[in-house]
Image 1 (cartoon, rainbow, N blue to C red):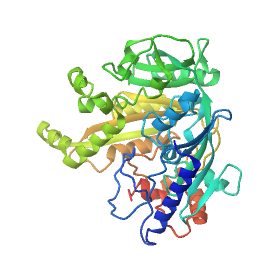
Image 2: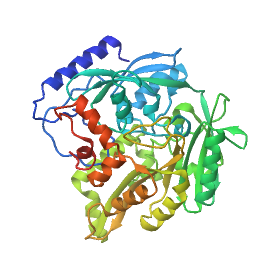
Image 3: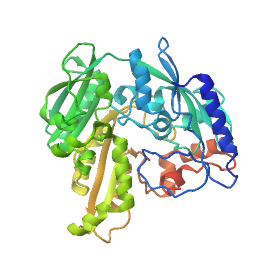
Length: 452
């Protein structure tokens, strides 16, 4: 755990590294790992030294707040807060997502139907701006414009060095109910009731997400936080969590295992590496059954072209990577999934309801309206002459037509005018003019679409 003195030293190193970057060189983080799924242009220039900004500075268990460094992973953050019986309001599904990354790049999880997105429980944050200055932004101080525009800015407005966040108390266990629906409209009606009542059939619901395995097999997983001591399942060994959703009507996990239930198998994507094969799983070390390991394997495959070579042997003409999280209004969920089945055909997909707690200009969700995040991650076969990003472009168009948005962590193909309209372009330009007048930071469109 990093104390305030160590934090101040790490910030000084960061600022010094900023000053060591030439005025004509782009400002970016010097980090080797990432949870992004879009290509980035190669860069051999020095970057910002954030090596000392990966810990928890302090926890106030009485006020239920934590001061956390921007590069601290949620795994380390939870390890520090859970012994106090506290967790962040929203804990994204993957262990190595950083707090700063979840705030500037958005994150989501099963508590988002009542707590919004991770940035909505931030009380204040220190940001290194494009001028090399560290400013403290809050919702109502002289840097309130930066505070409001920071979520979904992906480093185009600066980098968070310290964030003060709210924490919520939690018990030791989570009781789960996997409720099956035979079509999406009925599941959508249930989501609407649960979001309104915070309960289902008289039992409180503290966490809500779901999986659509097929058009006629949709499950909502209802999580009830409880201190009732009970037998719990373990999905870090031979058993696989997402399969249990179809097999068990009820289940229980420790709070810790509930937070990371998706990480062990990267939802269901570990199957691409053989990690769900019982024989392979027995010899695959537990410490390597993690999302960051699978992410590295994807990168290795990209460098070596193993999948492409196998596709050629199989006679697959072409393949497009479709890794996206999108949000559509709850009332449009059935139409989107019906279209998605016809036009894309990937299953299962993840469902996670959310409600924004206040307006955020760079990701303008209507406050008080329920949206559903639909997550789908994989590849689809395409013609050999298929235009670049053809499937992803169709998804973008459909999501826009339904009044939705998509996260920018993966490949993006919007034209600039459309992009600016969807992601607060005017607000972003005004805030950049104030905090990065010389354009040292790469702008959001260049980062998200042009992969600079």
